[in-house]
Every structure is written in structure tokens, then in C-alpha cells.
Picture 1 (cartoon, helix red, strand yellow):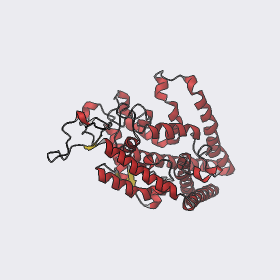
Picture 2 (cartoon, helix red, strand yellow; picture 1 turned 120 degrees about the vertical axis):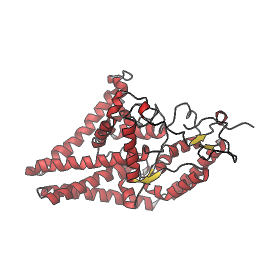
Picture 3 (spheres, helix red, strand yellow; picture 1 turned 180 degrees about the vertical axis):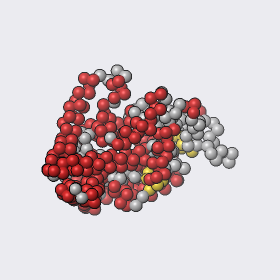
Picture 4 (tube, rainbow, N blue to C red; picture 1 turned 90 degrees about the vertical axis):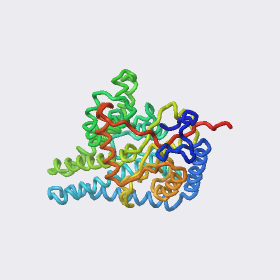
Length: 390
């Protein structure tokens, strides 16, 4: 775990007799220096924001709208199987771009500096069933503030999965792979219901009347989405209603599977660490930064892959700097990786299939009772949370 006191770990010396497999130990001052170096990276990036970033997001929006128009238009010829596939492909790309590189990033405030009303994080709405204000609370605030803190960050398992050994096992988790598959296929609906905290409602920790405003928001936003994708656009194609409906359902499924996969690759592959509330209490800025680096992972790929992932393939950089334009993360990543190497911190990165394979491996593994799972190794990084007094 992160943040244990060095005084309780006398065997973790830095001398010649140190065990090469022992955890990396960071002193209080080293962590604060990491924080200062990351602040400097952020400051340099903010100072350089300008026309290039403005043009980039406009190009992405133009491409997203173009794919949507193409997809909707091709549905009128959807009786031809190749055209139907092209329509679904175009519409899927449109929805992925809207969800990942535009919606997610705009609602993080990455483009608020432009003073563009259509890109204002507080009013932007995306092409998915989750109301943007609810997402900003569950994601921007809860997840990014309490990243991987057990009992605080509900993104650990999304309230329905066991994805970490510190989560207490019960027989319900035998269905882990089934629940994960259902969440993947219905991901936009899972995101919508995330702020409900259904497990707390069922346990009586949260009353139904407390969530009435959430449900009202769902009805308004999800109702519009269902009407648009499953009634209006299919009806506009007349006799091709069923064909268009099937195409819209498929495009939403493609978007759901892709988004789920990218997000899970960035949060749950092997090597990602979790933390307790006690060890992260009263964090300094540097300690918060280190937690973000240890609690996330990257996915390697080509530029187009990064765009289609909303640059969440650079999840480490995103957790460090959530309000910087995401297309800047590939520029920042080498500096962050070098900083990790300098201090012996892991920089968790790998190809898509490696990362998603390890995620699903954990989903199956932690479905089993603890007694059937091989014991876990010690955490590789320990942080001194208070400056040692000489």
C-alpha cells in the first residue's frame, strides 16, 4: 500500500545489502520534488496553449459531425448489407469521438480557456444517456479526487465488480465475469447509474428519496437519447425502420465496448495499485501526484489509436493533468516516464491486448474466494508521508 511510514519498515534500507526485490522507498522530500517537477510540466504546457489546440479540437468536431452525417445518410441505403456496415461503422466512429475525444475531455474543462460557449465544461452535453452534470460529479470530482482509494473511489469495480484483492469477497462475485460482460455491453447505462450508488441504496445507507433528482435527470436525458436513436432516426428511413434501428443499436454497442475497454485498460491492469483512506489522509500535492501515477496505466498505440481513445491511452498523464487538452499527453508522456525512471517508480504501459488481457484475467481471478487465489506480492512503492526529523 501507498504511504506507509518508513519507521515501520527497518528492512527497507538503501545500502548494499538491500534486497533487489524490495519495494522502492520514496522519502518525503523526494515526493515533494516529484510534485514540483510535475507542476513545472503543467505550467509549461498551460503557457503554450493556443491556436494549435484550438484548431485541433475544431478538426475533431468537424470529423465527428462528418461521420455522423455520413452514417445517418447511409442508413437510407441500409437494405444493402455493405452499405449498412459502412453506415454502422461511420456512426460508431462518430459516437466514439463524441464520447471520448470531445465529450469526456471538454467536460473536464480542457477547453474552457477558449471561452467558446459550445465547449464550456459546465454546459456541454454529449451523445450518451448519462446527464453531464451527474457524470462531472461521479467522475471529475469523486474519481479524480479519490483515485483508487478503497471506500471512496467508486470506479473501483463500479459498485458491481471485485477488481482488487482488498475488496471483501462474497458469493455474489462468482458472477464477476458475467457482471463485467453486462457492464461492457451496457456501459453508457452503467455510467448513467453510477452516481446512484445502488449498492448503498440496497444496503439502506442511502434512501430512495435522496436519489429522486438523479432519476429525474435520467428520465430527461436518457429519454431524449432513446427517442433520437430508436424512434426518430429509424422512423425517418420509413420502410427501413427495423434496419436503421438495428444499425443504431449496433453503433451504440460498439461505442460501449470500446469505451469500457479503454477505461478498464487505464485503471485495472496488473500493476495498478489501490490505497486506503488512512494512508492518503492529508496528502500533499506531491503525494497526490504519486498516487495518480501508481493508480493508472497507459496503452501503447499509433496516433489514430490515441485519438479514438480520447488520448485516455495516456491515462497516467490524464490522471496527473485532467484539465489539460488530452492531445498534449503524448508530448508530456516522455517527460513523465523519465521522471518515473529517475525515482524508480513504475510506468505501467503496454499494448492494448496485453492490458485488456490482464484486466479480464483479474476479473476472473477475483471472482474466486481468497483461499483459491495465490497470495499477492508486496506493493512495489512505499512513500514517506511525513518528513523525518533528524
